[in-house]
Length: 545
Image 1 (tube, rainbow, N blue to C red):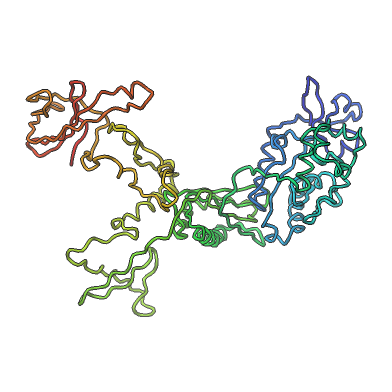
Image 2: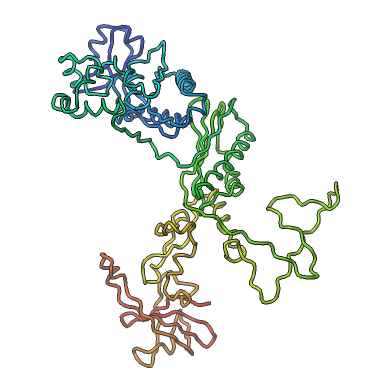
């Protein structure tokens, strides 16, 4: 691979055959052609390398969600010699693959099958694992496991370059006779910092576990994730559906123990060829009902292309909200003399016949009569009957169209009626101001804070329309008004209600809105209107009923 650096073409990376011929990264192209006249070159594309590294790091998520390129340069496809490394935090994951050594062997074998010359190492610290993978592992022994607590002895014989130090620092250490990492052990930080800089002392302390070093994953790992590893790759749609049916209850149980509900689910399928298939969907409110979430996946599960087979499937709650336990409704006792009814069945469940083997379909039993004076049936959380169906409908629409396409009015901080709400995506309408004691958002939480909400019209015009008004006095309510060429005689009027503009806005067009005096009026035909007076002019803004 050839790249231009400082106006000169040089080698960015070489393969094993070129390396055997004496070529090394950084060698000028002219010298490389002199050594190997038949050299075949190709331009180096760091952007393509960066995309390949990102895909490989995402594929490594089959072992652990904590994955990231080893350095920023390698993540950008500009690693030394064209090489690149990926860090994995497999804490708590090794037992899923049969232990540390088995996990490394499986990882190395799969990377080799993809065409990568990979060497892998595992240690307690990032620095020790980085050093062992690059300076201790070899093609004959590509997998190295450092036992817990033995990283000091494991890296002692390695050169100082294994500490991720710049070449200039390594050169200074070599001139001083410090050619092994164990030569740095007797030196304190006060001795190393003036001579080699603070990075050398910090890297040594990180490799030995004396200073913490955090792994920043390529994307925040989900707090709740379940995994299914298959003995043999699966490709049948029914097998994928059965795997999802097994993952969903496990994830819902984990969410229930944490007191949370899923707002976004991410299903990831790791294929045999090293590629991923992902499917994400959201909910309008926190949920951990496996049947409801499974119904959302039904229409989109066919989007997953198994390719040559799926080896691992993961299901994660990419976003979750607090969700406490909910009070379930109690069965209503039938009145004396009322016919006995069967218990309510779940949606889609078959009805059992009274006689075994009978295929006759019976009409559903009528609901028990409601005693006079009693309130209508309510949902489990106290909402009117049928209110529980609305979030399910929103979730199904969001599964088909995307939650960003399902919109609802959201209250805004404004006194002006036309600016008191805005259409926002359902997934963005959950109030972020609720305290930790509120386990579930209320859909009407914002509207209940609207002053005099019951006195607002049911229909608000897109923009106020001018009307001609006749009033007995300038400050009196209208006696009659003409709207759309029709004269209306007012028989009742209420008001005024003064609304001010958004005086807190920096934009003068919004902050200098003149005051409005609103009136609720009724004409002789019983129709009610919402009119206001502003700067001597009259406008009709809404209709009641």
